Image (cartoon, rainbow, N blue to C red):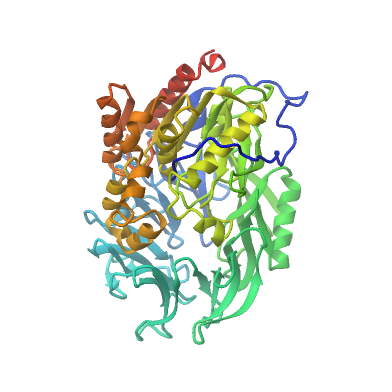
Length: 638
């Protein structure tokens, strides 16, 4: 999150991509598309293939909630195996050839429970039916069909213990009692709990290791939390670890780490400009396949020629789309492929390598015509203090990019980043005639340690300046109408919205705060209990409520409500465990105390963001009307 920006002369760079001044002659202005088409549930999504390669599974709507369906490959119809009506199923996976496990919370409280059901819909059960307990998956134990390893904070709300769960009998065995500071667990390829990540001395990170499960964990490496070695998985002989490390370097690279000597043995891959974010491998062939990283676009480095050939074979048949292999059977001869672009949510395909046939399964949102969607273009500009800020600009289709109403859309996190791809919010706004600017302000992840650290204790300061500088750049380019600029964001983006209105009141005509922080003191005091091990780190990254009280007061928009002159719309989930409802209540009360009316939407069955379809419709419908009125957007009101 961020705050306070002074309107100083800013040196701005030019767009990375041409075409941001005039639409091409071939482009036609898009017709007005129904709001619901952008935000309704997908027709089918989340496809997975069974371990034996005989069935597909997917999520699809049932009474407006995403449920699980199973279909035999080659069959005409599918079997619905879950019937949840209060909440979407958050995630699921195949535990074995006959049983699927899934996670679901209650009203957005993020206390996920683990359920199991057979692929014919029988023997449905909740394995972790405990109040105020959050369940996570450590290892699906794909080679042990009757068991999984899960985590729960049942014993201690602040700490997650690992359990081995028998999915037939429901019996659970705690594998290790978390002393309170362990934040992650790593199993080897035999499903043995062999390594863990912990926080020591409040702000240091440690890697714990043991040779076998009967041993005690030993601390083998401790670093400042600003440096990290993040294990992905063990080498295939279960002796060493593949990991991402930025120790002694700015960018995270893929390394082999020896837990016996606590040394990096080899650097496998790195990129000079960005962190390497993930690593994939073949379970069957026991080889590394790809490393993934994101510059302006998602990219991959191949370790394995067979994997490269598979991607090239699919990309040749599906040109113009990003392609990802998302699921495979144990024999690794059948694959599910997902496509997407900036103008399409994409589709799922089935690749059978035995027949070399690629079959289209479904489009995710077939009601949207990608030719009527806007292009998302990578851009960059220079901040007032010389920092290069990368981002994305989306312009309404077929409209001259001159004096457009602008919606500035800072991302949440704040230690996350925006990426290129289809974004329904952005496309909806572009369809209504708005230019949309997204920026990866300082602190956004993926650009190295120095860029991340530059955000520390900068909420409402240089982080917010980066947003302000992007807005001024848009004005200087002649793209944005300086009198018709809105700011909208969720979570940290909601904070940035409030900070923008409070600290640069002349810049924005209106703002939409979606589950955003308004008071850094109350926010820090009401974080979920399982964030407690990270509290000292948060104090260093955001600010200490006592030592930095003046700074936090200056950065908290609720204390500066008297400076806000723009119209404000606030939306909040009543069950939000991350940004409590009180954050929005305080801001609305502070505005009303000044006699300023604020549009305030609260959904009692939601948490950190609206997941239920009807609530999404309500929110975006209200936001559409709010922006149209405040920005005098005649194109939107047509």
